[in-house]
Amino acid sequence: MKHRMQLPLPLALLVENCRTSGESDAHIAACIRSKDFSSIIERTAEPSMAFVERVQLAEELHIDLEEAFRSGYEFGFLHLNGLKKLLRFRFSLQAERDYRSMDDGVRGFVLDEHAAKELQALIHRQWQVVQDREADESGRSLFSIHLKRESSF
Image (cartoon, rainbow, N blue to C red):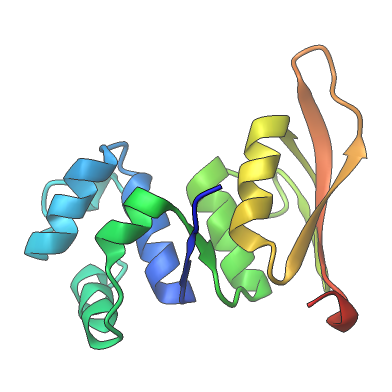
């Protein structure tokens, strides 16, 4: 299994928001390299995001965002609102429409097994994805996400 980079929340959400444009990772990496997001910005889930400022933050922190595309990444720290943004950006899941929000996580959303594993790999440091109901005929299951207990870190 290849090593995944740990990205700070603003940078991980930058990557996820750029991916909502539907463009390839190679095209997004070129936008990041040039700091020119004009070709994708209007097709992102959150066009008002401070794209260039987040790329500058990555440079200040000496984080190679292109490496995140090559090796994969995970969230370093992810608060509940960040989790909700991730669900919206990556899986098009909206709070109160597709799941219910709780103090310690979210519940009642539907994903297939592959997507659930992908989600767990991104958020495993703080959150646990739990299957609440077995897969239906379409292969999709009901899931919840709960904050891990301190002893789990």
